[in-house]
Amino acid sequence: MDGPTAPPAPLTSNRSSAPERHGAPLGAEIAKTGDTARSVKSRIPDTQQGSCFDTRGMIECPRPGEAFYGQDAQYAGAEPNYAVHDGVISDRITGLMWQQAHNAARLSWPAARQACEQLTLAGYRDWRLPGIKELFSIADFRGSVGRRPYLDDLFEIREPDASILRNDPFASTHATDMMGQTWSATIYSGDHWDRKGVEAAFFMNFLDGHIKQAPTAGNRNALFYRCVRGEAWGDNDFIDNGDGTVTDRASALTWQQSDDGRARDWQQALAYCETLDLAGHDDWRLPNIKELQSIVDYTRHDPAIDSSVFQQQNRRGWFWSSTTHGDNIQQADYICFGKCTSTEGVDVHGAGAQRSDPKTASVQRRSFQGGQHDEIRVDNYARCVR
View (cartoon, rainbow, N blue to C red):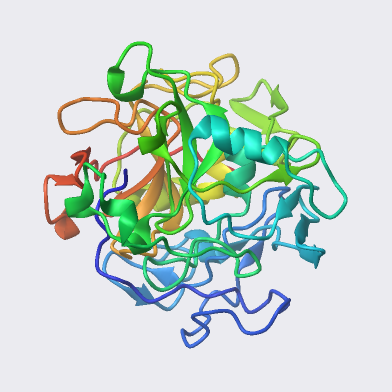
C-alpha cells in the first residue's frame, strides 16, 4: 500500500530548546541545528523536526534572507506534552487519551472499529477509532524507515513479520519495516482508485510517515489500529477576516485565503512565504506538515478544502509544507488537496493524503514513485500561514 522507501537519511532531532521528557531522543547524535527556532503560537502539536536541510543533505540552519530559510526546524510550535499512566498516554495539548500499547494483530476496518469500541483500559470504556487528524496529531517527523518510527517513543509500535507481504500485490516495492499502516475512522469522500462504490478510509503509516487510504471491506486490507478517547479533536473554526486571510480559531493560526496560482519547487515555496506581505503582515511562512494537514476538509475531495472560506486556484493542486521527509532528505512533504494520483491519473491515495516528492528537479531520479506509480510533482503550490 506504500511506495518504496528511499535510502535512509540522518535522523532529525528535537529542538534543543524543548525540555527532555523521557531521556535523550533517538538520533541525538545529530547536531541540533534548530536552536534559534522562532516560537509559534499554535494549538497543533509540533512535528519535532529540529534539523535544517537543503535539497541534498543536512545544513546549518540558514539566516533570514538566505536560501532555504523558513523551513520546519526554524519555527517551534507547541512542544508535544504527554503523560503516561496505566497503559494510557494523555496528550495535554489536544486533550486526547491514547492507548499506549501496540496492537500486533492487523484487523479489517470494521473489526478495528469494533475492537476500540469494546476496549476497557485504565477503567475507561469509551474508546473509539481516531479520526485522521487526531491520528496525525501524534506523528513525529524525526522518523526514518528502518531507523525510527514516525511516532514518539512513548508509544509502542513494532514492525510486522514477513507474513505481511505474502498476499501483498505491491510486495516487490514493500518491506516489513515500512508496513506501519494504522486505521483512522475517517472515510474518504471520493472513490478508492476511482472505483465507484468502493468505500475507503484513511490511515497513517507510522513506519514510513505517510497518510493514504485503503478499502474498508475485505481481510486483505487488514491494518494496525490504536484507540483513543476524549472529545473529538481536529475540527476547524474558520473566520473570514475580509482582508484575504482566514483565521482558524481552533488552532490560533491565520492562513492566506487564496494561493497565487503559481507552482514552485520547495526552495521557491519557502522564499515565497517568507517574503509575502499580506493584510498588513510580513511574518508569513510555509506551514509545517501537521499545520497544513489541519486545514484539510475530509468531507470534500475535489479539492479537499473548505471552499466557503478558501480559494484554490487549481483544484488538482498539491501544496508544499516546510517539513523535510526523513526517509529521503532530498524530498519534502506535501498534502494532496486535489486528488492524489498515479502517473496514469488514477486517484490512488485520495485527496487529503500526505506524501513526499523531490524538492527540486535536480534530485529527481525517476518519473514515478512506488508500486502504485505515484505521480511526482516537483512544482507544487504554497498556502502561507502566520
